[in-house]
Structure formats: structure tokens, C-alpha cells
Length: 524
Image 1 (tube, rainbow, N blue to C red):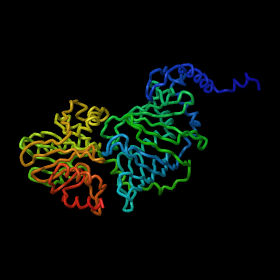
Image 2: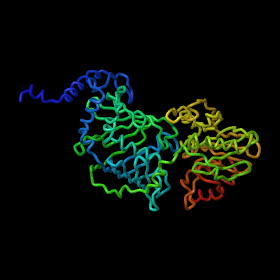
Image 3: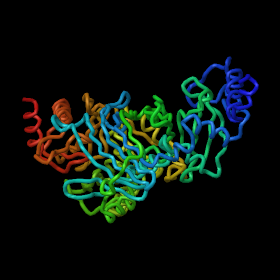
Image 4: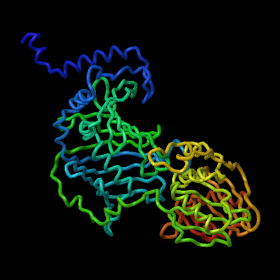
């Protein structure tokens, strides 16, 4: 066969691909690569210069093995290993503590369901308790955790992850884009020093951008802006980029085996596929769940839950502790009410502040105290700022709180988004008194290795101590993470405080002598 005949047997798409690669090489040969997400030096759509958006998408489908092969993935079973940076935890910020997991994941694309058996290793657990196993069964509409005592509702974040897996996972990302009626080009971007064309479409009302490598046309990443239902909820509109990498030839398709997720510029999670099986026979019993329990998962309000005043205890006259998953304390002083902690969400804290005003008729809320840098503990600070209240914060936490207050919340606007205000920080660097009289309080930074970004609040008249996020008792009445309370005991001795009762964000009033005994036992 002569060369002319061989040329005519090449498909038009292949011709355009070759021309595009030549054009891309010429256009970007002298350009200096920018950081990921940069558009500087990107001309047009690298690798797709002469194609419309759908033809560019066709090249990506072909690069992965073809539209028909991807559509022919009815289910996949994966053995996955990964790690997650515990960005929300309060034992200092970056570099973060890391958790690890090994998952067996079955995704049934045909019926829109998945099962995930996760074995996690949690670094902050007590000795011999780090291994955690959990089985999730979910659809986009509802899901459950399986337990020996029956099903329990899964979280909103699990439903969110399920929807993403079914629609934006590597097996379905390009097919979801192809089905979108509004598929179009967005501005090209650099990614890992390589030019990429970018396709954009709307999914669940929000734009998703797919970054296609200019040279091989594979989807190296997708990007979107979302309000997440996990610990990242505090940050409102979070910029997410998911990298796909370590491409392998699997079942006649080219698929990524590594998924690296970045949120707001933080490399948050990396998951690596160790083994994959496609289109196996599935047993419906694998996905069985209590329908009534699964329905409750979708009805949850997640972090945006209502504040409840049903469970409360008087710690001393004028000092009321409202007990929940995250405790809040109202402190009546001569010139108003102090609110100790603004946790969970702006909406929840709005309820706490409303209760403070109604509980003490005519007394203003004079300030809010935020004692920790753990994201769920400080998520409601935005509401305190929106209501024009002074907020007492630790010096080391100010950069984090400045970012929290400035974080956009356009997707789910809170009061600070709709009516921005500058924060009134009272920055605590050492001993600081607030108020006078019987309910005078004194703030002391803890400054321990694990409590560096927390402060404690002491009530001298009542010999009462609030220990931030340090005190938690296990079911057997032992201390969860004794180091935390060990550092509190050290701080109490350093400041020469006399304490009778101690309580914290997740623990009610407890005799100080009992806590000291438990700490002493842990040090022996």
C-alpha cells in the first residue's frame, strides 16, 4: 500500500488530532508554564485549536478507549488505599495530621448505588483503638451505615460523595459532560506545567470544568466550586480540583488509578486504586438497606442544624451550659451576656445568640469567646461578626479566622455574605479578664504541644474551668487522649488556679479532682 492510500485511510478526527498537536507544540513551545490554574500564556484551546467543544470531548473519549467502552462499564469493584489531611483538627494547622484508609468499593452505575467497606486508621485515637471499620450503602437519594445493631442514617457528605462518584468519577466524567446540553469551552489552563484545554458544563446547577491534556487529550483533572457538607462546610464556596493520574490500561480502557483532591489550594486527600474488576455479577443483597432509615439521611440539615435549648445545666448562678454535640455557655455579667463558643455553623450560632438575648431580658450580648481553631468549633464566628459583636480569639488563630471571615459564601449566603462587616477581634496573647463581679472570667492561653491553639476560661468566684476542646471521657470513664488534659493540668499549675469543676466543648461538668486522678494514672 502506498503512502497516499495510507493517508486516505486515516480518520478525519485523527488528522485533526495530528494537526492540533503540531499547533499546540508550536504555540506553547516558548511559553513559560504557569502554576496550576494559571491562564497566562495559554492561547485558545491547547490541543483542540481547530475543534469545537464536542469534537474536543470526542478526542478525550477516544483517548480513554472510546465512548462505547466507557458506557459499557456497568459496575466496578475497587480495592483502594488512601490518606486524608485532617485540616479541621485543632492540634495545630499545616502540616496536618493524616488519617489512612483501605477501602473495598463497589459502584453500580446502572442502578445508581454503591457500597463501601472502609477500614480506617485514625491517628488521634487512644492506644489500641486506632482501627475503625465502617460499611456505607448509598444512592444519590439516601444511604445508611451498617452496624451490628442495624442500619443508621449516613451523613449528607456521604450522599454528596456518592453523587460525585456516580457522575464525576473517571468512568463517568466525560459521559456526564457529553450529556450536558450546555457543554462549552472555558479558558485554557496550565496544569503540572502542561497546557490544557478546558471544557465546562453545568452539573446540579454548578459549573464543572474538565481539563484535557493538550498532547494526549486525557482528562487530567476536573474543577468546581461547591459548598461541602463535611468539615469544609465552614468555608462556604470551596474551590475544588481533583487530579487524575497514574493512568493504566484496564479492561481495554485507559483509566486513572490515582485521585488527588485539592480544596482551596490544600492537597487534602489522595486515593490509589490497587485492583479493579469490571462488570461482575452483583448481588442485590449487597446493597440492601432500611428504606426508612435511608430516607432520614437526606432529611438531615447537617451542619446547618437548629440550636436546641432542651438540654442545659446551671453551672453557677447566671452561668448556663447548653449541652449538645458542641456545647455553648451563656454567662450573665453586670453589663451584658458573654457567649462562650460559636460552633458548628452561622445558623446554629444565630440560635445561640438569640437564646442569649431572650434568656436575660434587656441584657445585650457583649462579646463572643471562641477558644479553638478546630473548624466546627469556630464556624459560627461569621454570625458573631455579622451581628457586630466583639470576638475574643487566640493570637495564633487570627490568620485562620481572618480567612474564615473573608471566605465567600455566595452559593449558600449567610448574614455576613449579604451584609459584610469587619471583625472586631479582641486578640488574646496572655492573661485577660472580662467583666467584674461574681461571674468575672479570665482567659489563659494553654500553649501546650497539643493545645497550642486553644485557650481556657476560668471563673475565679466559682473555681470553675472551661477547658476548650481537651476534656472527653470514654465509655469506661478513662480520658480520651490524656495528653490534652495533662497540658491543662500543667497550665492550671502554671497560673496558680484553684479549680473545683471542669468542663469542655464535648464534656459536661466534671470534678477536677477526678480529672487530676485520671491524668496522674496516665502518667504512671
